[in-house]
Length: 301
Image (cartoon, rainbow, N blue to C red; front, top):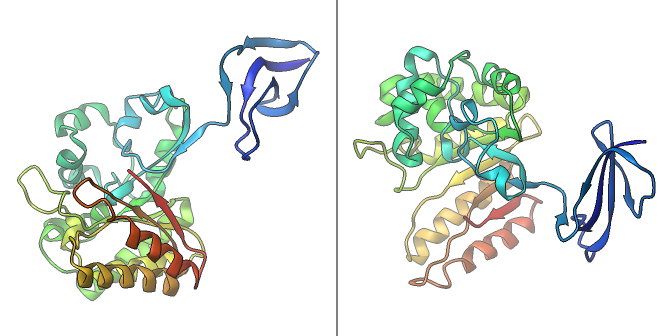
């Protein structure tokens, strides 16, 4: 007897095949059969008129704080999402000691519209390093699965304190950030994320910490992640406007970083009514880089 049987649904298996009408059997938490199933199960669900499909993966979320007070992972879970990736755009709660939580709250507050008071009330702090943060997330009761990047803004404030919002890192500070990023990825972080967009500011209209870094700093950290042989680099990108020269310079830096580090990239591809063809150079970049390495995934926010 099966543990669970979902009957009479329209099954879309995610492999690209046409949907079909059938049943799905589950045993010990794993799908064991798909098709027309005559056996009974301890629990049966009639899915007539509904789609039965694998859970969606949302690769760009900011649920780093919400996970502490929202067990369901709403509203992602309402739409068939069963796995989310948080920590995008350089905004994470680790590494950070509890006494310095104001730094990471400052980075999150405006960009994600979460009041510091809500985070203080909803988060029980039990970590300092990113591996400790992963252990904390793992222990929380959750209705969906979570993965996360180590964020550049949190990394900077952990190493540099208040100077992270205004100054360049010293060689020693940069070396420490590289080591911490490697440690995080080796412990299970999805990779490293950063923001260079002018849209990301603090509540007092200052740039978030990652925006104070130069490209050499970004490059060094991504290359350090590359030494692990794993991980993804996520970037909320620069705003070169419609200048072909500035756009090309930015794209060449992304391309060279992907090739030199061997780290997969994911970045936003935007288009607006005012610039309906703005996306095209990003597709050209993907093809250009892919000609040298298999590196790029593209998300459209």
